[in-house]
Image 1 (tube, rainbow, N blue to C red):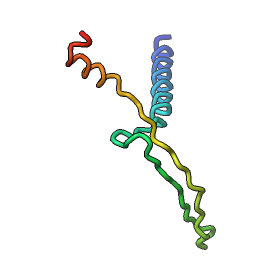
Image 2 (image 1 turned 180 degrees about the vertical axis):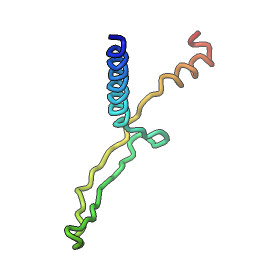
Image 3 (image 1 turned 60 degrees about the vertical axis):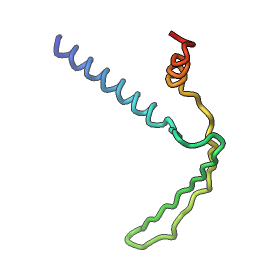
Length: 86
């Protein structure tokens, strides 16, 4: 019975870690990039079929505009340095 519980706990940990990695791996980080900056991206795939090279395939361009986000941890430290927060 105890062995089943340990396996169940390990499975739960595995599932939680996997879900966390999936969620947090998709978060974009544009630290140091000015708000309003346009980032353009496209992809080119090269491949062969049966050893014969095929023409490259290029995706459509995708443009992303960097949004301005506030780092509240830094804001709290900045305010505390002026005596605004304790």
